[in-house]
Image (cartoon, rainbow, N blue to C red; front, top):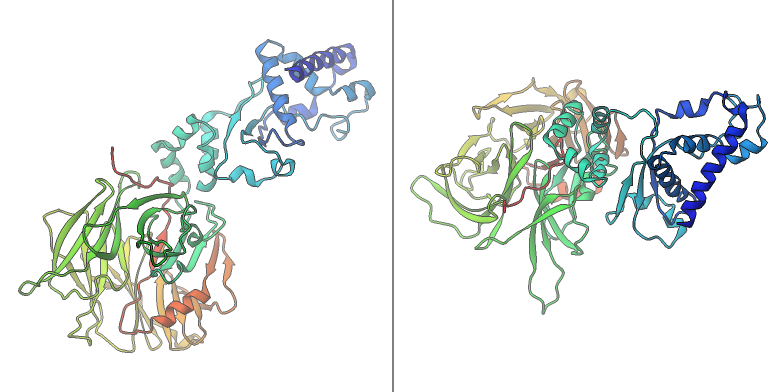
Length: 552
């Protein structure tokens, strides 16, 4: 209260002195005129001795405006007492601001940290502004005759920021939170960023004895603006368990398994979580009615706005039914985010089902794709088994999709997808010949490009295809067993880069990071050349949707 009175008296005194000096009335306010269009964002902690004065300054500015003395306040701000007493007519120019009040601002959007800080150095630090426990509010001083930025223009400016920055605006006020979560703002953001890639990582499916591992990751894109690869965000920060595994991902959601530390006398504790690691939103999934093993994760995306509206967790029952004549049974439990409940499904296939939980699965438009091989016909290339878990409830038939080529024991194969998860891709390397097939809407394979003769490239013959870039069908990732490192291949230019020494590099869109050490451990442990490699693509969507939850 005392400080406020002193500040008010000081403003009136300086304004009065300024009026006495008639020579100041005709002087052009060069600095003030140039500062009018600029409204900075200030972040101030009351415990910060350097910046805390801005809080009182803007409170006084607002109070002066409310009581009708804004003109006095404006004159006082323009004329510090020092410049009034020592300044001389004709000594000030646009290039000489030695006596100008550079520390004072016409207006600002000021966010004040309401958390109490007893350490002055911490109160002046930057890390407090992205602390998860941050508690603050924004103070916007009243307009004092200045030109305001139109709200429509301000919204468009914010929509051009990456999602990581936009998410912080939601804590400014209820109005901003409501605006950012509106369908209008979502459409505007997606439209402005339609030509930008999203962050992604190619993940190895792991068990509880191995850490969560990504083969290669892309971050720093304009859409999300993340400083780290996606794998570093996966483990929920509130969990202290040292045993966890990555199972699957779909449209920005991931499924992980948590195995709590225990002693011999403690009960076995196991949890399943589905969530968005970047937003740190997680939902614990209740256990199914009987013992099951993970099979896959599928999501439903609304066509109108691209929002993930629901997800389903699919588990394969460990117990098996007797197969029917000419048909094979796949028993699954399906958890739905819409109901929060498990349901049992008994699916049938015309092809033997032996590996429904042994290898990775892929998901595409609500469908799960799994590679299967008949144990009685190991000289066959195997097939893809697919089922639409968002299809008709009465449909219990799995689709059997033969692979496009005959079996060859020397072939190296992988299944992947691209174009933002819209196409299933099959890649095969036989000798020095690389071929790529795409599965069309009729579930038929089509050779997507001419075969590539890798003989013209200095490379070894022991290459394993790993995956295709999620957004660029010209880029493939291979593993060189000779060099024990990843290789990036541009199929259009037929150029290949061996990442033996280079694990991090940048492009015009963002940063790439290759995890050579963990990739080597995984690839060396999976030497079974008869199988088909399937890495999981963890790709963030174009918008920061909340994790779908059961409707109340």
